[in-house]
Amino acid sequence: MKFKYVIVGAGLAGLTMAERIASQLGEEVLIVEKRSHIGGNVYDSYKDGILIQNYGPHIFHTKEKKVYDYLSQFTDWRDYQHEVLSYVDGKLVPMPICIDTLNVLYGLDLDEQSMKEYIYNVKEDIDEVKSSEDVVLKNVGRDIYNKLFKNYTEKQWGTSAANLDSSVISRIPFRFNHDTRYFEDPYQGMPKEGYTKMCESMIDNSKIHVLLNTDYKDVNEYIKFDKLIYTGPTDYFYDYKFGKLLYRSLKFVSEIHSIDSYQEVGVINYPNDNDFTRITEFKKLTGQIVPDKTAIMMEYPGFDDEPCYPYPTEEYSQKFQQYKQLMDKEDNVIFIGRLAEYKYYNMDLVIKSALDKFKTHIKGE
Ligand SMILES: Cc1cc2nc3c(=O)[nH]c(=O)nc-3n(C[C@H](O)[C@H](O)[C@H](O)COP(=O)(O)OP(=O)(O)OC[C@H]3O[C@@H](n4cnc5c(N)ncnc54)[C@H](O)[C@@H]3O)c2cc1C
Image (cartoon, rainbow, N blue to C red; front, side):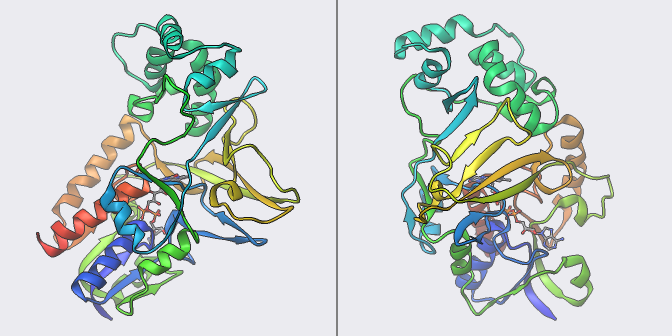
């Protein structure tokens, strides 16, 4: 088999590339995907009649009008502003931190000015910020760190925030107002009929061919190409030549409950209780109306399940740089996406990167 373009991975990076190549260049594309479905980590499906996101809650938000306009060709949107609460000391407090967070957490009655004074008095003087712990202590002080960040970070990463690069919590958003929305981006929402439908629409083109349930290495020798677009893990591509790159993974456990509503908002974080980090109730995100039944999902961090987040330590950043030197020398392979670039990417930035690389690396603009 010969295709001018072969894409490994049917996540948003691979699908965006496929869509552009087929629609803009009129070329045939083959996508090889090892899972049984397209969409990568944004895949959603129905469980007992309720739309759930199989790899955890995904909320679309972006500052990039170009990305929003691009995706809007393939979906309508449900207007949704994400809200997250954190369960601390028996109370539910808004995240990220705003006036209401401190008022509920400490039983205060702060306004903008008094919140500024409060934070000024509790934050710590740290000259050289070396870790994620330092970032939080410098911004909001030890008690807020202990209640909201310390154990959550430890659960999420399996190590103390003191051992994690400052970039992991590079900026703690906190607001001196009553805005309890999780994101402030101008474009926010959920695809009206879900991500899988949106992804199907992206590749609804007879020039795009998809081979599911197939690891590309199993078919590599049978498929010839001029350009390979690779969105899988880089270490695997190079047969772990420099050793494995570490990813923090998540185990996703979903349940159906015979009640109309399970919790106050779409996502509740549990920094100090339980082994899971958060609970998502999908109907609150999707707006789906199903009486007397709801679907929730718990996320258990670990190292053995779906690779989700590059592990942000010096050791693995350096290891990736060794791979990067090889990647930069490849003439007919384009590496793109969160696994190949060993980088935490939100959906919008993956799509932006794919749109940009299509122009520079494929169209040659
Ligand atoms: C729990 C969680 C929540 C998130 N929430 C948000 C959110 O709210 N908002 C947001 O903007 N972003 C969110 N993200 C980020 C979002 O998931 C990513 O930006 C996006 O899915 C990345 O797309 P991708 O194509 O790079 O990777 P992926 O979606 O991982 O796609 C890569 C594909 O390649 C396939 N593949 C890998 N190796 C091979 C192989 N050898 N052969 C064949 N196929 C292979 C994989 O099976 C996969 O389908 C979240 C991520 C996680 C983990």
